[in-house]
Image 1: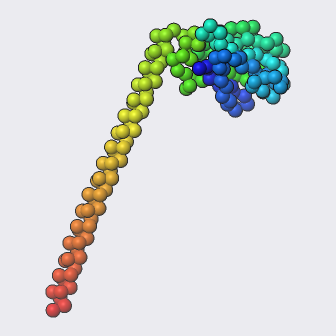
Image 2 (image 1 turned 45 degrees about the horizontal axis):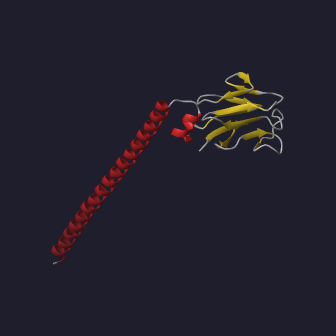
Image 3 (image 1 turned 60 degrees about the vertical axis):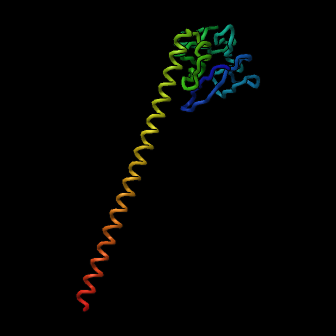
Length: 172
């Protein structure tokens, strides 16, 4: 398991993945795992890697550097709310793909990771409950419509009987 990142460039969003056992090199050159054609990014600009249950970003002697939360860095641990800028790109942790193990790699304590998973489970249950309620409401509407149709059919049948009787009475 690794960490999912989101890279934003020129109003486009790209998904990146940093595996546990291999660095993810970002740059403009052919040797980069994630190639970005942007003049402000070096051929091998930076790399993300996981070491000792922590994810790091390291500048690979790029021309414009790596900016982490507004500060130029050489090597730094990455945390959940960090914003990383390289060239014209912004990189953040993909919060929607987080899980317990990923939170630990981001340097957050186990209690926070557990609380995060509990919150996700609660959101999932709430969503499931809303879906069930919607299905019940839809079923009630369908049942109501069926009973409404039955009432209309009965009224129509009675009207036909009345018309038949009236026609018979006046035709004699």
